[in-house]
Image (cartoon, rainbow, N blue to C red):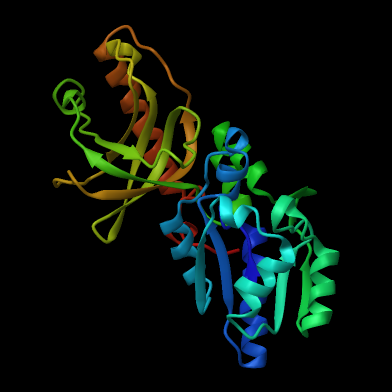
Length: 304
């Protein structure tokens, strides 16, 4: 078993979960992962709670892809936040399952004010007959893989580096809504306008090469995050132009996987200049796809 927020399901989380799955199979037991919703900081210290890297639905999908037998989601509220570590283990875990062992990271802590540290966990393990395995963090070029580091990279538009820590492309899900139609009418670039989950972190504003899950398949395209300053519009927008796609997507939910950022947000004198830049952007993105610069379909699933 393991438990935690697992925000992002990055390579470090994956190593812990894979170890849980391996250990369960070795002893003929079930692999169990416990997470919390909402994020504990949203209840304990909402003023410092960061935007999420993965919403609950995506987290569940990723955990399932790692071969976990049982995925438990505990509602994190003020009551749970006040539970002492011993009470949490005894009443919520040990009374409901026969626990063989727990795998956690080196910085793991749980319970009221995070009093349940590694030493405490080992002591409870000795008392109740379960082992505790501490999984060392994964490092890339000397830097520890962490949700905070990934969050910072995505916020800076460094989606390529973030992908290296995640083990997959950063992605955001959004519902398709109707737009002004300006993209198709004035620019010749019909875009899909998306409303993402406000709790999930978006990359820095700019233009990105993307792959999008559409109706059971994956389409290439380019995405724009930012403000339509050329048209003096004040609302922040998230829109995607799908290459070689025809169809009505209104009302559907799409997942956008971010490749490299092509450029930052820009303001143009008029729609003609904007259209010329979009043509240059499209050429760059299509060349990236042809060159297979980290945009292979296989890169869009969880893995090492």
